[in-house]
Length: 148
Image 1: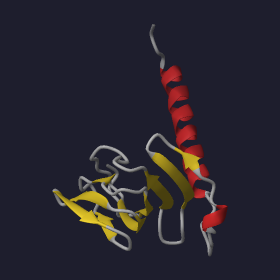
Image 2: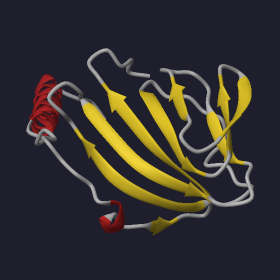
Image 3: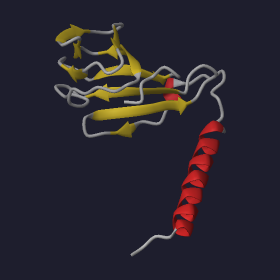
């Protein structure tokens, strides 16, 4: 099948219109303002490793995206294999004992501990205690966050 200049022109306009519409849709996302989330009002979704409470995923006045969720990991399980991503994240342990892969080393921490996963650093987390472990995850993307 041969494509004419007209066919290529129509395709180029369609691609440009799609990109423009996508950018417009992303740009009109409502910014997250002052907010409060009540622990007891957060819906709990069961997972194959425990449970998750999704809190928010939205742009803010200074961030392209703020995402927060709370994970409860059953005893002896990991949330996922070691991985990396361009956004930075904080993990705050609420209860239980976990081991976290940080800077190439596994470290054991408990309630009140804070874990910082830097951009593109390999990390993982597993519950090594005798009870479920619950932790808060706070991810963000700024204008300086690498694409991948």
